Image 1: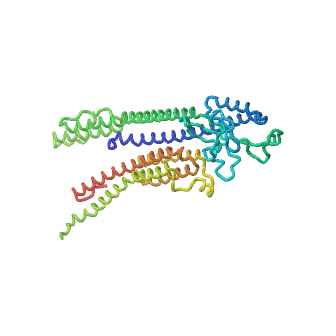
Image 2: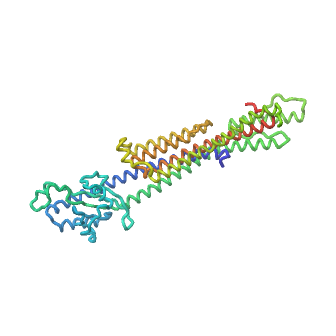
Image 3: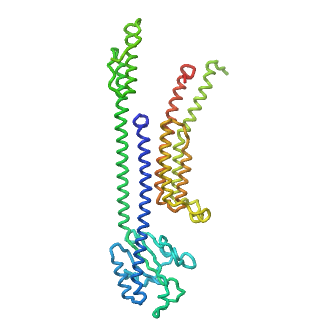
Length: 278
Length: 169
């Protein structure tokens, strides 16, 4: 394959085009995946903020029933994996799943360790640091946001409340969203890119092959057949076939020299000085 | 001990030169494959997240923040495009250029940039694909060039053995 003219012409072209397209597709896929992930985080953070703002009044009034209903309803929404609020000690006080209530959260678990890795917990995190992705026990990809519930003057100064003003964080909202749709979109994108790359490869190799066959390989084969037929016969050779200009010059030159040598063989004394292509 | 005839001694020097050239071309033809192998070793290290390197945070706290992953990706595409074009031009002109190992260096630099900007996992396959393409084309070019030259040198040796002189240039 590598020794033939076709192989030597097609291998570098195929390798260069396919390789470059694959690199471009991989970079593009990585950029799209990164963008989608950031959008997911922003959406999850916005949802966490919405839940916090919706529950703020109920927290203010210490209306635990309304708070539990809001958390339960949000948790039942399609695409929400879990919603829970835990207090400063890490005990789940509200959750959409009843079996999680009053359970102690492990501070070394993913999502908690970001703030609790030092002796003093970090009280503020960036949006990207609040997010974590993992696969839950059901095998579903989840993106979770851990949003702290900050103390504010209207909390600490209220008559019904016991939070001192020095306490910065009152608790934490943990909300997890399913990544099934995003994972499915990325899988579709991958398949589309593979098909696109394969089509481009077939088109490029096919196009280059067709052009080379038409302009190079077929004329060269005709020229080779003509030369072989002329060499093996003792009679005057047939006229050269129709060939592109460059190859036609070679064929005519060969035809004339062959005709001269045949004439010299028949009549050695007479030298043919010039001969023309018929 | 027999003495060489003057004719034989006059062909010895060019024959030796041709045989040395043959050996040199044989060594050169494996250069691309060696570079490709070295790149694969570096890829394995990158796949394991460079276990012998310090953590990105430790390095960036000393030398400053790395460029963002998107800029590195743009640079990677420009580099891959330029390297492929350059290699194809060299192939077309039949230039003997041994550039494979410097490409391994450039590709390692891309791995390191992605590593320090904490985006190596997402972009590993892009650098791997670029490396395989560039080094594959370079290997093919060097191998093809050497194969042609080896054929020519062997013809020259045969001519020398037959006629006692090198063919006219």
